[in-house]
Amino acid sequence: MRLMGFIGYMQEFMNINSQCIPGGFVMKFSRSILIMLAILTAATVVSAQPANIDQLKQMMEKSAGNLTTYTYTRSAQSDFLFTNASLKTEFDAYKATKGLVDLVNKSGWWSSNLTDEESRKVLNWEGYFVSSSEYWKQGQNWTKFPVNDTARMMQNYNELPGEVNLIKYSNVKIVGSEKFQGEDTYKLVGSPFEFICKGMCGLQLLSAYLESPLPLPEKLKNGTLDFNTTSLENNSQTVLTAWVSKDKYLLKRLDINSSLTVTPKILNISSPDFKIVSTLNESTVYNDFGSHLNIVLPKEAQGPYSPINGMDWRWAIFGSVRP
Image 1 (cartoon, rainbow, N blue to C red):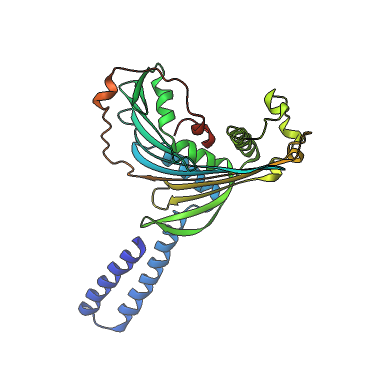
Image 2: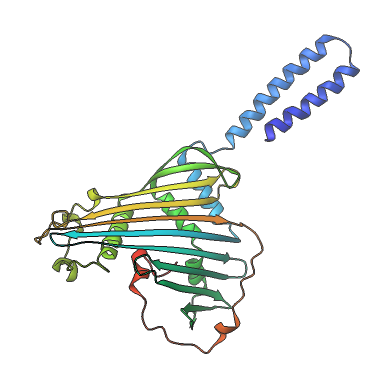
């Protein structure tokens, strides 16, 4: 855009001069200057772009460290298929989350709805962080939590730098450019480093057994399962796809698609034959960078409060009870 604007300006400049100065030499000379300047301008534009993925990661990290406000929306689908000699059953759930993050005023808000697709039961959970206190709403009940370390709590609400770190510690490549929400973006595709994949794989394994009709293997029950003796990593896959704005290097969208297959052979345990197939697909979109946000605690959140009597296990199948 800057290059085309500059060329247009120079063409207009030459048209004016060609009317004022007779002779072809000036026109030929001016055109030569125009071509040279255009080439130099193009080189400047190109040099401002990241030459490789490492440079882009650094620019993303810098942009994530200078955030003031933003919003996000996330959709997540978790599916499980359980089979053995006598049964075949599924469990599917969908979670929709939206949130606001205001780093200037040290406040945040998120709201999640989780749908059990078999029973059609919908769980609601909402959280606020304002005036150095956190407030949760589960169903119709509110609970207040005093916060001693406000900086750390703000880090929990400010999730985007963590997602940028996930990309930083991943083997990703720039696979091309795409328009996303009308913006020019780099498209990145890859997978997390091995140590992160192991952690994600372990969480997905535990999540698979939360509602499994199959008995929990003894080694998982007593905590003696050695991850390194299993072939879980070879039977799992995690793929990241990210869209990063070209102008400010801000993460605009991140998709995480993971799958895991579990059998006695894969776990390297003695057990009657069974199979669990787990898939988790998540997509997060970030918007409204630097916009004015109005995070106001509802009147009903100011009391009376009710204690939280445990969390519904279905929240944990998405890897965390938080959004």
